Image (cartoon, rainbow, N blue to C red; front, side):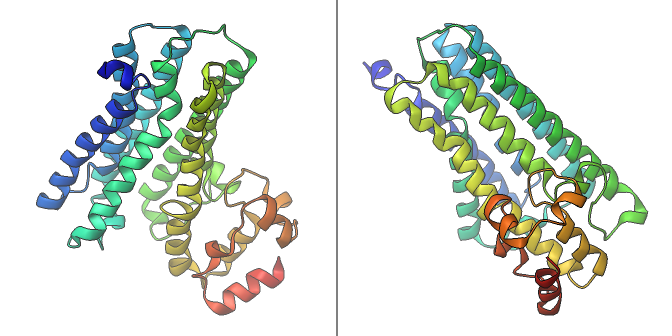
Length: 297
């Protein structure tokens, strides 16, 4: 009876996610130790994908492939972020949270929501008894995952290498794929999860289509809350008075990788509407710098 009531594993995955994140929240709150925060998020994805695959036990090819894609992504991201935080020694996102229990609780609630919601396409596929043949949507989705994964991994490694060079201390990263996007890692993450959603479509029926909230939630989170706005604000405060940085923002797309020669010559209205150059990404530029940026665009 219980199995029938939770045939899509929604209750199971929510309980596992809340319990797993709560453990790390307690560690962070009591010990003021936030070095495992990102590791807790990425490994939670792995737990949900493997758990639902094993419990269902049907081992359809699509289920196995999508679960493996999440496993590879989660392991790579989790180990990378864990290594990076131990190298850098601190996570500045938590500077205002370590002694503020309320803010810490809100952060961990959002992290649990992020994991559970974004995992929905894989959860539903693994819970499904349907096994339609592999279709073009599957292939396209897997290709999208491969491109997004490669871009995210490349961007992370290039930025880490850039930051670890003493001569680059106190500079913004503008090498490699960062020449074409101010946040190529986020583009890669959004792209790969959209690919996973696309690969889940052949299985979806009726209300199951609501799993589209996974990539949508991830995109909105990165666009407006914990992703791009925080990094743009931080960089603007540090480098807003530096002419080279203002030029970098003018000619570099906030998300979609584009040649600077192309993006820099596009009108501002086009950037805002089609390329997500939202005004909130420039709200902490010094006033004079912002006017120069706006007029020159």
